[in-house]
Length: 199
Image 1 (tube, rainbow, N blue to C red):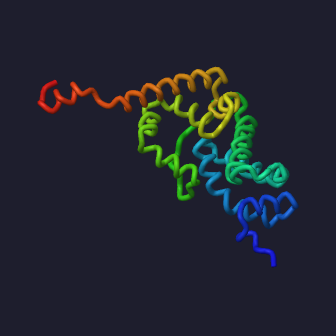
Image 2 (image 1 turned 90 degrees about the vertical axis):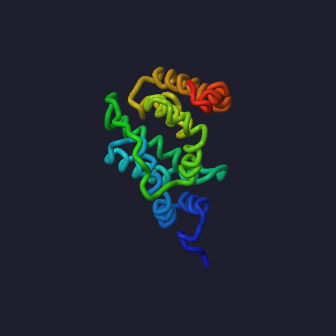
Image 3 (image 1 turned 180 degrees about the horizontal axis):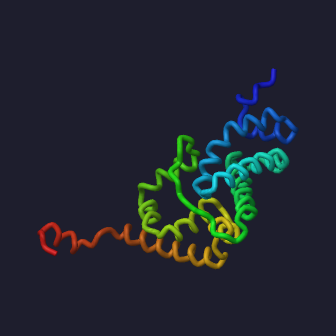
């Protein structure tokens, strides 16, 4: 007896989708549409564009399921399709206008990747990232966390590709400096003066 779609793992469902199994696609949608919507909403402030990108993502998954070779996590495969569909939807919606960008707090659904990133948030790297300007942080998030090219990030952020490159460069320099400063620790002379109540 074949297990129901809800009992199969993601890779088995994706193989079934490649064979034309609509029930398997529905199960993947039920498992992944929630976190995908939350992550896209954190990248784009236009709900209609996000909804369109989600629909396009699962339509593309239906058509391209056979492209998955089993080398990585299915969620990462879906996110790769999804972020590119979001960029395409933004291009269609806005043309060259600036994208309303915001970093909303995640709702109830949180991906495993976001849980790991939340753990980093309270460490040294999180403190260094928090010290970046919103523009620099958005460029780093788009290129490093989302794995976009500078050209794709430029569309997502509504700026020129060269601007993304320079923001990423400045962000990396600022992160290196911040992390190096944290690693060196506070100035021992300043600590002694503070301990003695002098400045």
